[in-house]
Image 1 (cartoon, one colour):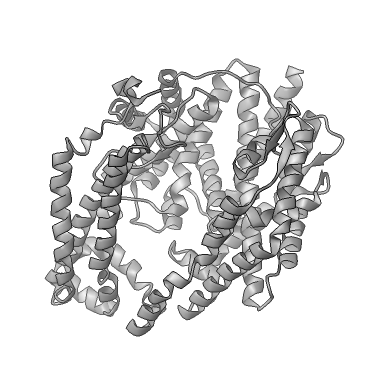
Image 2 (tube, one colour):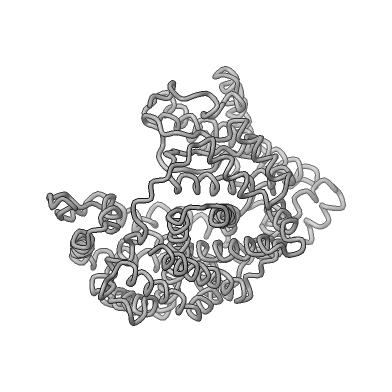
Length: 597
């Protein structure tokens, strides 16, 4: 539909941010001037405790206004990506960010030139500076890993020459590769692409998904040496930087920002490895339901519950989500209901609207939600998921000053996944339809399989190849492919045929260029399962503890913030509990499936 066909209640009301373009331009012009003037504080910031504090405070004030400008232009653009005025407006703010980066670059270097003992004296001279104590302590963690001014400038000047491996990888994968044709369900010849592969690999026609699988990896195999070169180049760049910055390993460097040590990473891999039997049971179940003599890797993505066509109109969906989340308490529900009423959500797909879904906003706006709602269960689940993000943002912003009113990527998916699980559990408890229950259970099993086990397999691959590269073992195409194939054998077990083509799958996974990122998906869902279990079992203070986690923002590091919610990721019990929920879901599916035969 055209956007003007959508009711106002189902669209963002962006006048809540700026009433009109005149107001936007007034703020824009003011911020632009403040940015141009800000560089003069480089020479005065460290004059005394008061100028030190005032510079930090002004920095945040400018940043807040700039974020508000950015959110407004981004939301406007996402409503209609074909609108040239919106594109231009967004570009103006993006350019302003570039100016801001150049004008404010001196903040961190000025801080790190001092010893922390000097900062502690500043606290006594200017008590208001204690507002930044947590932030400053975190900054000083990097002092031992900061190079001299000359070295930092040299490293910075090399930035443009580095990082090209990922760009080359993307261009090759997304622009240059062609995969040929396959035959679809109607036996018609169609072109296979990266985009439609996900459709064909889920096909209920086994010939279609097998041909798609073999055709895709045949092409990747042809370019496997080039992919090995780009990945190896990216890894060696990261190893070099981590050594220059005096870290013991690349993984230590990549986990440092979240104040984590490698034991968290290794605990995840070890715990999941000890729970592989549950995954094998899932594949045995899939083989049985699909009635296959052999389960191949091209069979594992096809859904085992087909043709579930129940619809959830959006007005009903909001009520379902609110009822499902009512276990989180009256205050949580009242805030979320008010958010729905205050146009937090842009609901329906319209011409040129951005696809997918997200939760956005900033400290001085509502935590807006973008949907492309089409009344399917996945759309209902997405509403619950994004509402979790937005409520996390709401609590963090309402209970902290600006500098701590956010949350880290490490915990970003916890609140959203808690909501997904609570929704699924609520519907499983209240639904009278076996097909709906089986569909939801199938979705949950796929969530556990894909997010806990698959991401952990990726994490193990990444850890091991970095370790070998740091030991000067060449990351050749054969080395990477054989390493990846053996891991697939480990994670699929003896009852799944691990097809030869899968050894090339590593070459199509962009996350291996994200520098030890994928493990966060698995730790996030594990924490969410633990929290949801405690809440649903009515454990003492479980809801209050969870809300304390939502409210703490970045005043605590990720591990300590999760401990507020009763989650200790240093212990294997958290990962084990998520695997246990997977096990229980498999058993529940089996029982219901047998009854429905």
